[in-house]
Image 1 (cartoon, rainbow, N blue to C red):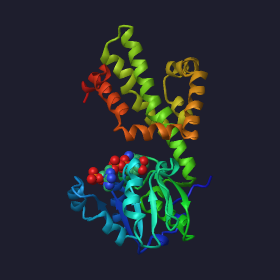
Image 2 (cartoon, rainbow, N blue to C red):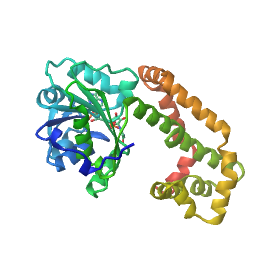
Image 3 (tube, protein in one colour):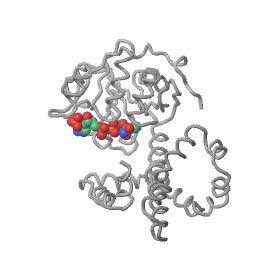
Image 4 (cartoon, rainbow, N blue to C red):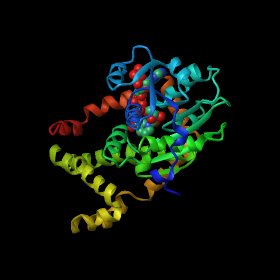
Length: 321
Ligand SMILES: NC(=O)c1ccc[n+]([C@@H]2O[C@H](COP(=O)([O-])OP(=O)(O)OC[C@H]3O[C@@H](n4cnc5c(N)ncnc54)[C@H](OP(=O)(O)O)[C@@H]3O)[C@@H](O)[C@H]2O)c1
């Protein structure tokens, strides 16, 4: 897989274009600021009554109603929540008679789930920064940049890949590396990692370890330090040096414990569970469950978040924050 850096990507396809950013949230705000710093012409599209209008205006952006952005911009980035991409597209972009529009997303979920069925007139692409919005801004400012994945979903003009690569470069991804993928590969792998490692897996691992210590009579602050607080230290080490590098930097007891006990804790049952999770995403079962949750107003999510707040690990967390 080729790694594209700044010098490998032609910025010309984006030159002189007006970029319309929909939303001003986690991804939209940093991407818009990076583009502005790079000298690109950016307009922000927000709905009436948006609480982000003032902040965007204070940062020097022209903030317009969404239909006006569709009229003015050549390239539209839909940086609104994934479940809102299709409603926004259907209401404001599909209905536009304008030709030559290119539409970009920061994640392929709405396309892969089949929620958004693109109009055949539009170029459709993905530029997915592999990091949170604040990292997209911070790393752009310090010159490092978060890596990004680029995919072309629908190419009418014949220019979509070049445009998407230029956009990835403009928001800073090519400082570290831009990689080409497909919407399917980006979406499925992103959801899989969220469910098994980053969100679903890590939180269960932390809580289960914490609860095991509490059950055995350890105090909450001590259990919190060992099972949650120190996660960042090891995650940072793995992020910087890889797993082998992390192992070279820890104590001999930690290293032996890792190698001797790790496979017993995370055993073959977990691997089988991961395979089933991947299969549920690939078959579309996850999309159906998520759609049902959206349609009923997120009851499962709200219930879990209420329970989260009541867990004693959160009280221990507040001791330090
Ligand atoms: N979160 C991340 O760091 C991250 C990382 C990688 C990729 N992504 C992807 O980036 C995309 C955006 O995610 P995000 O987390 O940045 O979203 P977000 O912060 O939740 O987006 C909030 C913005 O979207 C606007 N919005 C919401 N519903 C809207 C609607 N129906 N019509 C018009 N505007 C609407 C909000 O409007 P108001 O101003 O009116 O509230 C707000 O400005 C998603 O595809 C996501 O998967 C996110």
